[in-house]
Amino acid sequence: MAGLSTRHASATKNALGGVMNASAVLLFVTSPEVHWLQAVVLGIGAILGGLMGSWALHRINEKVLRLAIVAIIDEPKGSIYGGAVAAPIVKEVGRQALQFLNIPSDPKLIPKKKVAQAKP
Image (cartoon, rainbow, N blue to C red):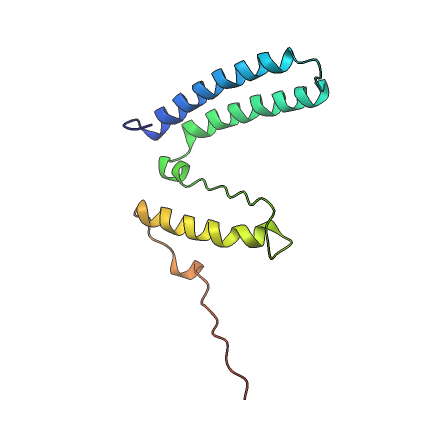
């Protein structure tokens, strides 16, 4: 949200999300095919997630909040593990985010690239 601090933008986003979720609940409850066990579990998870997000919002440094990165790879190709596909993406996005926020990287944490040597 342009012009707002991270905390105020997040609070505004959460309020808007709550309105959208409330309207979805109204449609969901009036549906003839409701799976109530799944609905209750989903609702409890949403409430706990909102409470945990609010707790974190007041206690975590704003720069750290800006660095939350989520990569969702739908049906990765070339590897059976989504993490093997997502890891390079998260690494590059994280590197650029740290650079944008002027947070210096720690060279000790960056692995040295191994150069393949030709066999004689």
